[in-house]
Image (cartoon, rainbow, N blue to C red; front, side, top):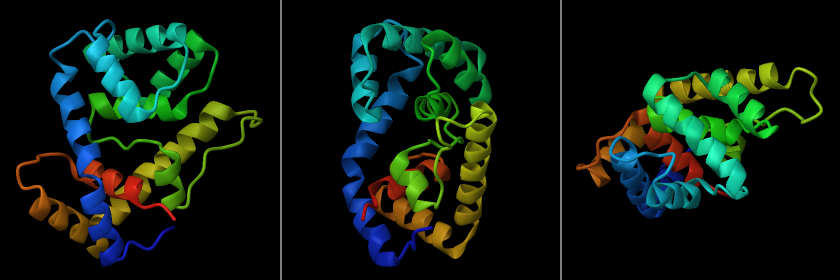
Length: 183
């Protein structure tokens, strides 16, 4: 697990500004558009979360996104549905959908996982979904533990100092900071 020094956090806080603006824009649009058909929302989401899949995959993804937005859905459910619809396990994109709908949930991202000392299971794992869900649960636990620590308190306080007008969940503050810290 990466050491979140004051210097690293401060550097990340400055670097995350552009990403923060994009995130806020997406979240502001989320309930005002039909995510399954709105090209602006989809283009911004694809850009922010680096969705680089073919048009058919994206169509299925955004149709599911609309359903999850209306009815809710757990991380496990979204993973299962994406697998049924596309034939692929997509833990990262599943978590991005879930965290968009419920901003108290974390996002699986390779940089964030690495910084927290986690990694997704091999594609050869026989119980792939269970293994993915274990990593996601570990991610949630590590984020909660980190947020409850002095370091987590420093991250949220520093975020609120630099961006007093922004009201987002502490887990998203932490996520944005971890996302910016790259060795």
